[in-house]
Every structure is written in structure tokens, then in C-alpha cells.
Image (cartoon, rainbow, N blue to C red; front, side, top):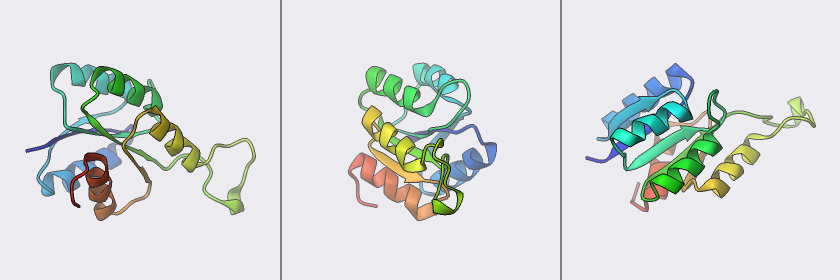
Length: 134
């Protein structure tokens, strides 16, 4: 059974992802931020990490860089709903979600996903990250 570590500071997101992934046959562990996740990785390295980008304590991009450096075999899916979504609420000083996800990809994420997403989107992102059929 493949294992997944979900990193997100929002308890509701962690809970939903845990349910979706367990139903799909994954063993799932949870972490509330990047620092907690890195501590957890020392005990047991998962096959896949799904991480939010905008979190307190340790930003997701920094977590991705650390995971890639210490555990290069782990496949990473980055998720984010932060930033500015479109022209109606455009604010020049904000960063768009796409920029966060591009930074995650540059840091080593194998797949990226915009929040909000559907169940199938999560499973497809994992398939993309692992090179497996969805």
C-alpha cells in the first residue's frame, strides 16, 4: 500500500484529503505545517507528499526543497489556493496562485493543483507525480 503525507495548515483540507486518499487505498498521515512534516519524515518516509504552499512555521516551497534534498525518491504534489484569483479582485501587490505553484514546481514538486479541487483532480495529480495511470 502506498503511503501519503498530507501537509496543510487547514484542518478541514487535511481531513477531506485523508478521507479521499484512504478511500483510494492509500495509507495517510497528516501534518499541520512544513516543520512538523519534516519531523514526521525522519520516522517514516512516505511514497508521496501533498503539501500546501502558504502555511505558517515553514512555507511549502521551503518544505519541498528540504524534502527533495533529504528524500529525493518522494514524489511531491503541491496545492495552493492562495494569492489573487482574477481581474475582479486584482491587486498589483499580491501574488497569484499560479506564481506560488510555479515556485513549487521549480523547487521540485512533480505535480501542482489549484484549490479548490475535486476528488478526481487529487488522484490525477498523484498519478502525474508518480507516473502511474489515474
